[in-house]
Length: 353
Length: 226
Image (tube, rainbow over all chains, first blue to last red; front, side, top):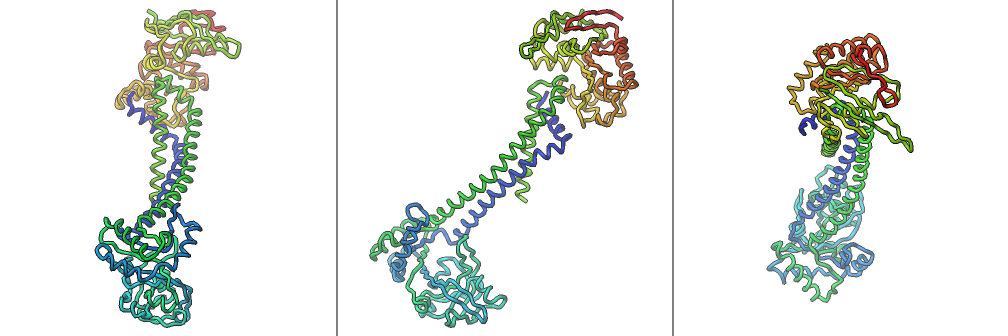
């Protein structure tokens, strides 16, 4: 007897017992769709975050105080304490020095400092994070203005009271009104809104959309701060990243900074840390979903077992009429395989929808 | 020449310490075209006789010859082929595949002999026509009366043109009217030259056979022409 006719026999046997077949498949359908769904949620999250980082550009280097990556790669108490103690160690002038000394491979660099304060527009008040940035933050960190224009280098040098609003802040304070050139109050002082930034989102942490950006010097003057949160550098070419990293490190070490008081990293390093966390998350989700798949598989085994017991008469009859044991075995294997494949595909289909 | 020959065949079942001799050194021979009825009380070995003679079960000892060929030691695969080609079965319970059309039921043995689909359908239709069910080909067993179901089963037994037809109480599950129809069908088959071995426990049914065998304790106690 040909394989093809056994296959058709198997299909017919499944077809005449539609209810049983569908019930058997149900376990696999649910199992497969939950595995696909949960892992794709995890993977999707990972891709989304990687995309966010890619937006920053692969040729960007960051300098932060302390050593957030530590030996273990995570942010332990130990590392956090270091960051705090090292906070004041990075000075604005280092940025200019690095840019001056390594002009050949570093095309641009921006500095960021931060403070918090209360913002007020008419009757709306809001506690907010203020990011003091150099004017070239726009190009170095790929953050464009959707309304108005970024403040200029001139504004920054003269500590002008202008701000760029994160899109969420703009929405919360102004609603539908165009905020450009409106006056807002930060800690009682008047500031002019120069523009609104594009939506960036956050990676589960604080979102840049909730920040107000103002010139770094303005922040230093008005908020009595000297703290640099980070430098970001644009490197000429991706291949020069390691070279640039080394040079920046040397320059900072030359400024009497300790090895532990700052770190230079590129986004791949950051990405790896986050990816590994997300990888664990995805695996965890997958494992949970896999349990339902296993349950589904056991369901199929169970129903196959019951159906073999139930179908001993049919098997006996088929044997009496000339079916060899192989033929019967192959027929049942086909049935089980068909159920699994059909169930699996339906599961993927459902997950896809 | 004998068509089927059982020579000193025994079949023992071991249940715990007790050995049951379902067939005890039984010898039997049937010629082509014979119609044999096998009778006996329950436990006499009728069913075992049928199983062993029809290659469903292997004997514990003794030998079986079909068309002069020793088939005793055939393996499961060859026995299946043999049953498929040479033996037709009619059961008390009909044993049709549920939710499967009469046509597909009749064509089932042909599936295992490897005939192509067109040929299967053609042969199955001819057989259903022969048992008078040409207008019921599409019906599933639950849409047929008991008598009709048994006729489908007979068509299935005949479809591969076997040498011997084994019938195990073919009228046992039928009312007297349907039973009579089935009896008539067997008579007709016998007249057409088919070799039939029928197990029954009702005398009046056994009477339509030309030879009657009585079994007791796994032995043939009488074997006479009627």
